Length: 400
Ligand SMILES: [Mg+2]
Image 1: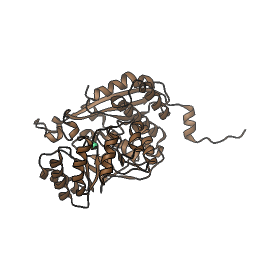
Image 2: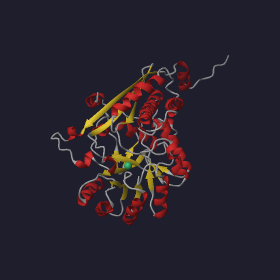
Image 3: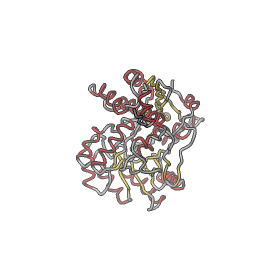
Image 4: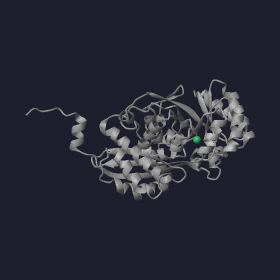
């Protein structure tokens, strides 16, 4: 009998299916009082955007996932943590982990469907449940990349690019236009070519801050505006009409998250690109916006929109409608790494939101720092997500 050489990866898979042994959820909080030991946390950090008027932030939050297989491999993921990371952790423990124990960790797409279908009939297709699913999904991709010794973007068919264009975000809701101008200029001096400004405080205030920022950063840098669902569509038309003369690149979340007709009305009224996505979850949430031509760029947050598996499918759906994705950037280093991996692996990537609010969970949690230069971030090339966490620091931030 002749012997046929089997590729190592195939033989490895036949010999030892990687069965899931545990899914640990770790809620973490970095309180703002750590950054401001005197306790005098500035109001723009407690309430950086219009969407935080009723629910102020007291720190930076995340729920990390540490998924282990019986053969000793480990993958890390992140669930969006705002505003209650312990809630997401409990969903992982009570619902998701029992569904996954003993399953083949390689079968990521099948496991996504198994978990989603277990709760979708009960209406759990958004919110905390999807955020809990997202972190577990990211951990499975990290683990698979480590198992095969390749970065996640390679598993996904990439890379399309080695470095990812980013914009600085946000210029938060500061009191005076001059303060917004100084804050934006700080980003420009750090090498950012595109900067996002948080508005949604009424037409007069919005225009004053946007005009001051535009003057500070000059005509050559891109100015992006985020309204965080602050207006009804008719008020948004009024505000956006005054902003378009300032050369705005895009308007993000001008009105309510589900107001497809409102988006369409704004888009039909004015020469402006509209962006949404951070408060939507799956492809099914985005479908009506795409079918109705109501959105120009879509912003999934990988730690809430179903992880890498679902965000990749959303990107493909957007591509079908000639719409780009621009992943949302609030979260820890794990979500950032996941976004870079996806951004490197899809053709219709536009730009990534590099959040620059003070956040040790994003900037200090990894052994190696992310490589930023000339308005771009390097895509990590190590196995999996390509990052290694400082677990001593994780322990410092544990919220339980
Ligand atoms: Mg936003």
